[in-house]
Image (cartoon, rainbow, N blue to C red; front, side):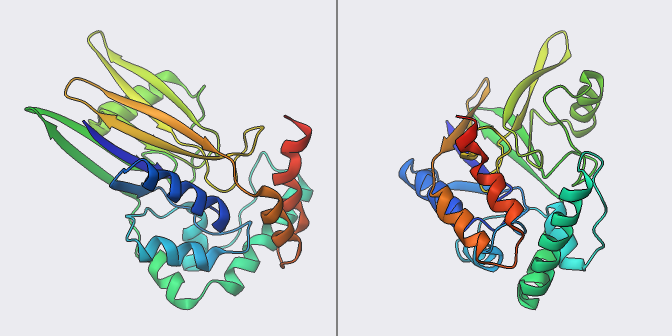
Length: 251
């Protein structure tokens, strides 16, 4: 059996990242990958990048990373109202002004996806890691996404498992591509900016066996009030601290 930890969407939240990394270490998982979005919305963007660099975690280019690396314009998102759009622009501009040039260069060199292939007792398993989808690093693939489109992604990629982030909502879903074969779609959620009600730091573990691959979604508490307070003291809009603290009204 092979174990792989997959983290994503840290968004400058260093305390959440540290908790997740300690959990992975405690489990003695030696392989780890990051699906990107290291920056924006919490004040430790540079520190998060430095941690990923220091422990040499292979990392993808998330859509937020790409925007900061190449100084791309902020394009409004359809499901954001005018208020959130304004807060988002301010937060992203804060990253553009504070992420170091060395870290922007490092981000600019990250790949869009990574393919992994493992052999266990003569059986080959292929895993495709993407930030958002097989087509783009900013497409939203939710659990209710069109089944036929998901099948086409698996058929085109020839992957047994596709792991993605971007939505900040964790799930796993079996996709029946033909009468004999199921594939596995996994979203590990977000380490640093979960959209789930409890706002816990979330990541995925894949366990690869000879005849199957299983996923586990791990959710961890972290000092969320400390992170919100740091946001309030930074140049990032209070909106993002308030967002994290909304869990108090939902659990």
